Image (cartoon, rainbow, N blue to C red; front, side, top):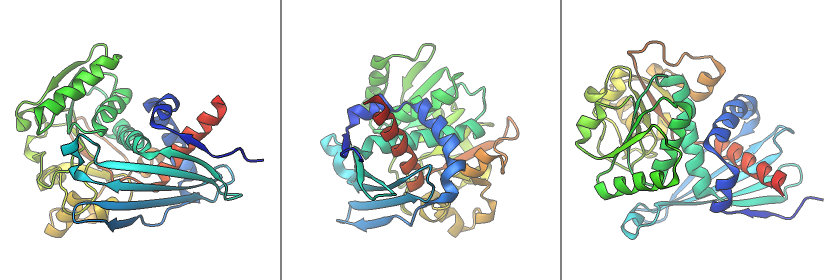
Length: 325
């Protein structure tokens, strides 16, 4: 008998997932299950001129991963005026053998965990091991997770700078992190001139909805790693063309080549070609593509998310929950 469906809340997810456990799980599971997991193109529906509904299904054909999952996401960017997240989501997990519902969970939290951990997993291959300064551009829901995830894979980081258009939001992110503790040996700063702080970043992580480039490629220091998380449609753009021209560019999956505003625009302008994209995350994990090869080169990672990673994250949360019962 399959147990009745469970609901996994945001608070419960925090007890089930850590950035380290999820990074390790994804590094092991992506090569193991990607070839036996189906993920159709996500459905994207405009629900108003400024809002969207996204549906992201995925299912496994492997008996070792007996799950079907669907993430349902609403995107309301103007929520920031009400001090609410711009993204809300639910995830439904089914048994792929019987079709029975196993769990529903808060996919807003699930998404920020998986997004941050994918960035950090890429950073293991692309950023310098001796990176000391992390610049976090953006102070939304993702920012604390990205900071923690990058610190997980790069424990030598000594300084975190948070920059946001609204300086108070950057300060609040830092205050929240410091209140949680666990950052011995790490100093925190906020804001300053963006172009000047970009020059300081060994790792520059961006999680914004910006439609104008925030990171100027000419300002990136030698050996920097640029992590682009925010854009998921053609109008969005977190860095300029020069950043892509200077960088060795990797993506989380092929969807980034048709969805990410930075890349689509650069292709259209002839700045870079698709053939110049160095590879994807799975190829990095499997050793099929080389990541960073010199201390001086600039690396770029662009992610747009994938239903496979959602399914694997939901798997870890659900199985950890069931073991704890």
